[in-house]
Amino acid sequence: MHLSDLPPRPGKKAPSIELRRFAGGATHAEQLDHLRIAHLTDLHFGRVTPLAVQRAAIDLANAQEADLVVITGDFVCHSQMFLDQLVAELSRLRAPALGVLGNHDYWSGADEVAAALRRANVEVLRNAWTERLIRGQRVQIVGLDDAYTGHADRRQALKGLRTDVASIGLSHIAEEADALWDRGVPLVFAGHTHAGQVTLARLHELALGRLVGHKYVHGLYGSRAPNGEPAGPEGAVYVGAGIGAAVMPIRLGERGRRELAVFELGAEARVEDEHHGEQPAHAGRKPSPELTEKRRAAVHKKMWKREVREAKRSLR
Image 1 (cartoon, rainbow, N blue to C red):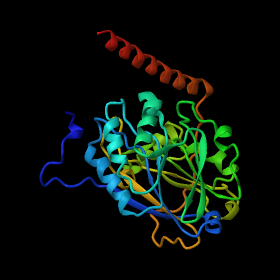
Image 2 (image 1 turned 135 degrees about the vertical axis):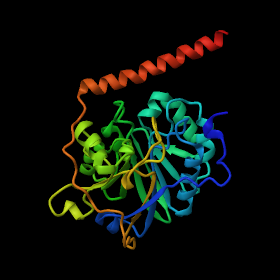
Image 3 (image 1 turned 90 degrees about the horizontal axis):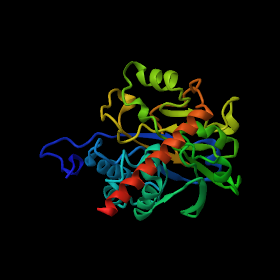
């Protein structure tokens, strides 16, 4: 039994997860009557994050009565040992759910994680798009595979996408949003950064923005105005703070708290008190082709090691 399997101690306080609400943009207001989207990211099923945290996240998502749940990668932490937990918890989602993979999913075994998600009735988009009919309204959901490990293919993901139908995008890495905006996807959901987890004195912006080179660190960026008015981005991206952790579960500061974000899209959608408005992007720094190839090679190395371990077990 792992620590994350243990039930909460009697009297122990339930995990705290922030609920953050936002309105949709002008493009969706023209295309949709009303659509509620709940966004989760970086669940990180594994030893680092207690199972009670993921359970609380699913409960909170269900309580929002969303039309659609989107999950933007890093479903697992460092291995496939917790896939049964992942299936059991995500199967409890009441709304249709779609997701894309993240770097931890690739490090742990992308095909195995994707298979587990399908068992949990979560549709996995790997450089593909799908169309859902929700209360008579057509919505296209574009899903990019993980860009961190070099698996994103925008051309393949957008192939055949219609510009006259409402669209949203999913990407583990938020910087991919810029190219999706150019192809008529006005709102993209992303994750990966965990908002830095420690946001006191804006440490997350220093560490992830200036040092790591992320253009988008946490929250809402870009523009929800029509055609990027005033002159600016042609769309918006939301980077979730996530639910789990990969190394240390510490979260300090208001912006670094675990979160569920809910977006109200459509003409009748209104949010009187948004958590924050659009923020200016950081300068950003794209990873070099050499770095991306190094990350891709790391995935293959981990896959080879898993295959060797399995071969040794079968010979015992």
